[in-house]
Image (cartoon, rainbow, N blue to C red; front, side, top):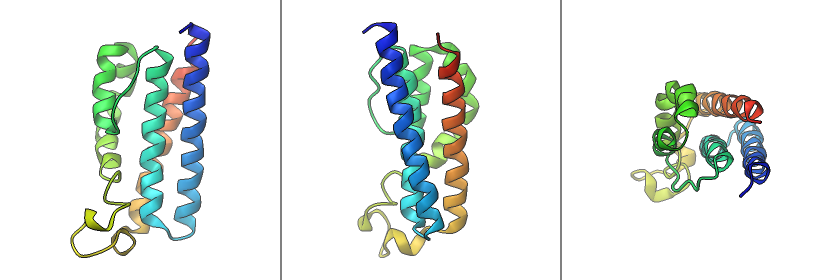
Length: 141
């Protein structure tokens, strides 16, 4: 793919990450904390994948930790700009499955377990991912 097409694809993924971030905010405001946490994870995942696509690479998987660590091989300079988010990535990864499935937690549904505090933390982390990736993409010619 051309550099221009790569950036267009990256920006498409970043716009979708922004949509997930908006959804996470709305869900948190409405008290749907589990789904808010899930959409926060999705924001981080899609933002990271945008960087991969900007570099004409195909990311695989849903783990932010994995996507971030493997970014070091694809784009070491981008990884250096984001590696301080590894702990945030690990926190958001915990919201991928148990926030959506009743068998992801023992005896309870996600709505019975996730709290406003967790949704607020997930939103904060997702916003950090989104803003950092957005800034990195803006620096890409």
